[in-house]
Every structure is written in structure tokens, then in C-alpha cells.
Length: 293
Image (tube, rainbow, N blue to C red; front, side, top):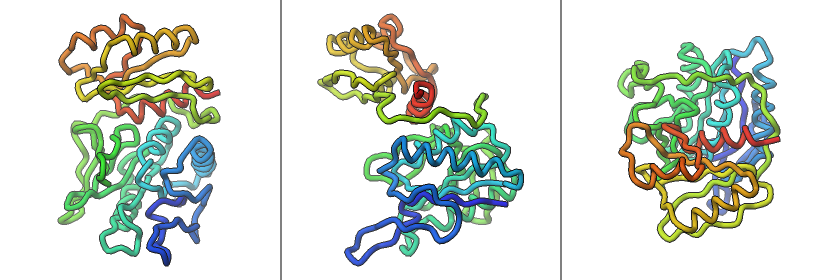
């Protein structure tokens, strides 16, 4: 038995009389909520985690297909992977770049191959089925996804870390020989998420650091593409506030294979905890889970 869970998004929307895409409640399948995915927050993620956990408790479940919006597809995939990485069946997320009635939409093919992946028993855990324009349909692991580029609806994994691909010519499946599965202790259990638990900051020239909100329990610092951030008085002042409040600071976007710059060598001496070779979205979701109560 394959169970569908509908959450809204473009794949579950229609164009109304004003020309605006609006989400519709699905006629079949389970529906914990119906939103446009830019509205994703702790409330909805808690509902989704509970819904998936409930379905997995049914011994007849062969797989799960979750319809989801593209904007925050990667966040739900990463969160589900953190909790259900060791599930005994595939959990597939599918989305669409355009509403279903638009001939440019990839929603139908994304859903079709999600079902095919489940029936062919290609893997267990959390995956995204998505076809970028003029490319093979790609199966992405839930913990390897990158953020969308600006103005783009392409879905991409970390370089070389896609899970598998279906040929656009004959539908032949090819597993990625370079893909290495991460060991996980995920057991399906999870705390109740709260918004604001992790403060995620991105670098920019002349960056001004904010005061840390009272509900924050951890800070994730993003980096430039080379894994660097400016080490200056603003950072040191921010670190002092975090230290006084016993709030840990993590830095993502680092690679063990990259050049070590003077600034990156200073991070650990400042008490910043490095996160290597991991999708920033996965790092954020993992910290969100770890520091939720």
C-alpha cells in the first residue's frame, strides 16, 4: 500500500479567476494541512512529522508520497530525513514548478517516478523526485538538497550527491556510484519543534549582527562559497553575547577539502563549532531538532 499525504503547494493549487495560484484541499489521501509552502513553520512541520510517523506504523505501508510546495521542499525533506532516515520504506516528496493544468508543469512526471521508485524498491529513507527542464528525472536524498538559486525552480543536490536518475529516453534507472549513505541513528522519535529555536545568519559585506532573540538556543552562521566569514569586531561582540548566554554558535558551508584561509583558521579559536561537508539546510534542520524541547 502506498499512502499519499497532501500539504498544498503549487502541485496542489489551481489558478483562480484573478489569475492567482491558490492551494486546494486534495480529494483523496491524507491531509494534515493545506498551505503554500512559503508559510511552512514549526506548527506545520510538527503535523507532518506526526502524520508520517502514523502512516509508518501501519505494517502494510510500502511507501509514502508527499505532495509539497517547491519553496520549502528542501526543509521538509531534510527534517523528515533527520527523523525517518531508517524507515523501512521510501518516503517520497514531490512538487511542481507550475500548477497541474499548466502544460509546462513537471508535477505529473515527478509523481509518476516517485511511485515507480517505490515499486522498484530502489531505496529506503526520504527522497525527492524532481525533473529540471530538459534533464533526466533525478532522485535526491532528503539530506543532500541545496537551496534554490534566485529566480530558479531547479532542484539540486550537493555536487555529485544525487541518489539516482531515470533516463528521459527510455526510463532506465541509474544509481549514483559516488553516492555514500550517511549513518544515522534516526528512530522516528522527535521533539515538538518551536519557531525561533535556531537563529540562522547569512554573511554579507558590512554585516551588522543583531541582538540574539530570547527564544534562541543555538546560532547557525552561514558562510561565503569558500567557507569564510569576516572575523571582525562585529563578530566578536556577537560571540561575546552568545557566550554570556551560553548559546552555541555553528558555522556551515565548510569543506574539509577546501583551501584553509586565515579567517577560517580563526573560527575554532573563537569557539565557533564547524559543520563540514553538509547541506546548510540539513545543518539548520538538525540543530532545530537538537535544540527543541
